Image (cartoon, rainbow, N blue to C red):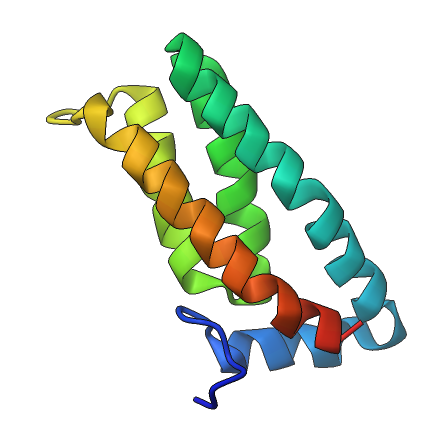
Amino acid sequence: MTIDTPNGLDLDMFQEMQELMEEDFPLLLQTYLDDTPLLLEQINNANSTADAASLAAAAHQLKSTSASLGFALLETLAEELETIGNGGDGVDGSEAPALYEKALANFNETKPFICKHL
């Protein structure tokens, strides 16, 4: 990986989606750039209000969109947040704020890479 490649990027998956979407790929990336901050805000709000259902829903959407673009670290963090929201066995909900902070940091690291591909 190069210095410009964000942490946790599955470059093969990213390039596969780029080839599949062709000229629509920049629109997909722009939608991801627009929607991800809203999902992260929903996750943060759900953490603040202990709204497990909202946490699970927003995290699930973030997980799915991140996975489709190859943002594997963000996908993993969102999956952990979704598990917390769903109240899985042995889940420690106190980890949610730290996971949110990691997800936000990773997204912010990812944005310049995405912008280069618009």
